[in-house]
Structures are given as C-alpha cells and as structure tokens.
Image (tube, rainbow, N blue to C red; front, side, top):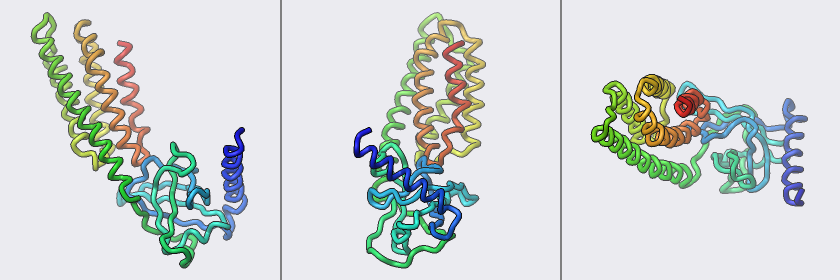
Length: 262
C-alpha cells in the first residue's frame, strides 16, 4: 500500500475507532443538519473540515416536511470546528471524490461550539447544485429530443413497411414518452413515489403489448426504443439519487432487462 493511502486508511480507521469508543459518551458531539436534498449522502459517509476527517454520518432521515435531517457525530478533538459560525454543506469528499460527505467550513475561526442535540440549517455550496442541475438539464434535453426523434422515425418506418404498429402499443409508447418528457421538464423537482409507480405500470403495459407484437416490430423496438428507455432511466436515477431513492428503480430496471429476453 502506498504511504499516502496508508495514511488515509490509518486516519479513517482512527476516526472510526474514536467514534466507536466514544459514541455513547458525552465526549463526542452529536447534532443534526437540515438539508433540502442529500445528493446520495448516506449513513457512514464522512464529515470533513478541510481535508481532515472529523466525524461520520450517523443517520439520514427524510422528514414529513419533505427535507432531510442528517445526524453527524464529531470526534472529541474536532468539536471546536462545529460552532454557531460554521457552515455545513454536502459535497464530494476532498480525499475520496467519488464519495459524498458533509463539509464543515468556518468563515471566522472560533465561536460557541454547538450543543449535543442541536439542529442547524445546512447550506448549499456556491454553484454546486446549480452546476449539477444545469448538467442534468442539458443531458435530459438531449435525451428528450433523441427519444421523440426515435419514436417518430419508428412510426414512420412502420407506416411505410409491411409492419404496422398496434394502436394500443402506439398509445402506450406515447404515454411513456409523455411521462419521460414531464420528468425532463421538471428537473428541479424530484419525481414522487406515485409518479415512479405510474411509470412502472406504463412500462409493464408496454411489455405486455411488446410480447404480442410481430417479431419484426419487436426487433425494431428492441434496437431503437429500449436503448432510449435505458437512457431515460439513468437520468431518472440521477434525480432520485438526490434523495437517496435510487432503489425505487429496481423494478423498472428489471422490466427493461426482461424486454431483451422476450
């Protein structure tokens, strides 16, 4: 193991052991930070002050108000970093960029250390969520155009060939198209569970109609439409990940996978 990797591993292990040993005592500092979204942050992710690992996420709770309470535990020797003047936001870990973390910053050193059980308001890192949303909007816009183009070309191709798109199958495709387009138009709003369930039902109906279609039509759908399904689901996954809800796509992933084996 490289020296720098050994150092990071040792530091992480030390923090974990400290939290394990002192977790139930009054020496650690435990409090909650309220965030509108968590961007995939989960239990056991780390808390950073600069590049120092100072604590760990103990819980991520979704509230009735539609936001999140993130409970963090700070190691005793780093309690001074969490004060009434500190800012807390969610971002990529400074050391492990593929991981999410709670980042602690102090504009002015010092200040009154937070009390155990406090609830503080989290901040959005300047430009972070705006940049993420802008990138997602660009990808969604491109996917939406590609989806609509592919669907129209498929219908046109079938109209001018021996194949004929069943009316019910066409209606189901139009319904799926409308749902995906709605998700793309409302990227600032994460789809609720009912909307995901409706998408499941529409895709199930499509699968039923797909099985009844002629082999030539099945092949065209498999080659042209199903790849678009996958692209749209990946965009939806990124939206749901903001609330740690990507597991809700398991059934949809399974349905799309089964279409390849029909």
